[in-house]
Length: 231
Image (tube, rainbow, N blue to C red; front, side, top):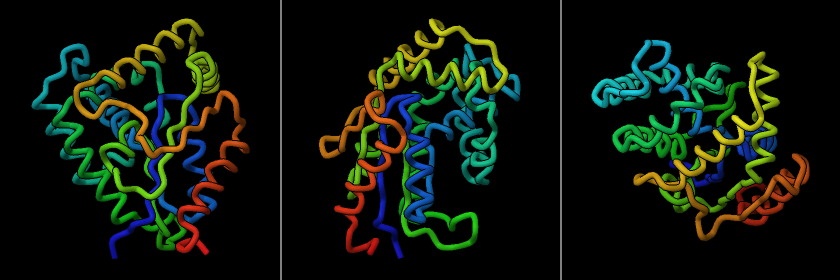
């Protein structure tokens, strides 16, 4: 049976999409997919293979992406903490903007939404939550629930700085802020599937809400729109 219980969550880096997705998945028994981690996984794999990231070989990148997605190895790389390293952050936008790679990932993400994998404990998923930057506009435009999660660049830079420090990396706030702003610009202006809020998406600014408030706002919307399914 094709799954129709899909929640699309979009927004810029560091806004809190991942935190909200995990909380909602645990609460509702949905499978979650961080699509940004997929592009980070590809980038990390290329870095570990010592590929020249300043001069990406398109043919190599496309073939690698196909192999990683066909074998689901991409999900293993996506669990590596190094996908959030400063080095990965430096190059992920360059990988994510390649149209051919986005096309492969689009098929992968759509398949996840329509046929979500079982939960870690073996239970069948009651639905899928997919987070990224073009989920509500490109990947799952007919999702019954859509959110656009955002926060000020300064708030997101502070969060990312703490993440780097917790990972044992040395980082400077101004450099992290500049990286955040540059990534936002790249995501908004790329020719293929730019980041933007879907017209029917609910906007949540996590600069103003804490994690619990954000969860409660999202839960209220989901309960209203998927009420019959989740009773």
